Length: 147
Ligand code: ZN
Image (cartoon, rainbow, N blue to C red; front, side):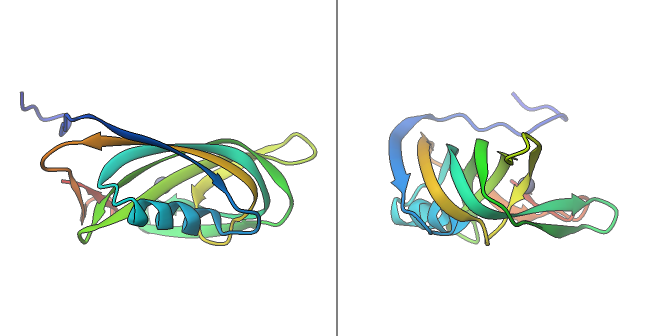
């Protein structure tokens, strides 16, 4: 079925893989490394744990650019979620994170390199389909979206 409101991909459940991340690694770098090593072409990620510090970003829709924030304190990862899809033919991780600091404040954003893992538990679910989407630059949003 085709309609004007969305594009659709339908696949079958592939591998479900769990990881414990090593102390001191870069969170996004580790997720990206796993995605490439396992050659996950389409799927989703869930993770939780704790970080020593974090870097997240917010997308300025009018300027079509990300601004980054340093969250320079140890925090819990209350919820981490993301997806893996192909960008320029290679697995690419897009992840968002919600943190909690020691005052109980919730902070978060689009995960950037510069987030240092204290402990991390990750599940990746692969979605297998013959023609997974590719991330291609979208003029309207300024983002690399699935096509
Ligand atoms: Zn994002």
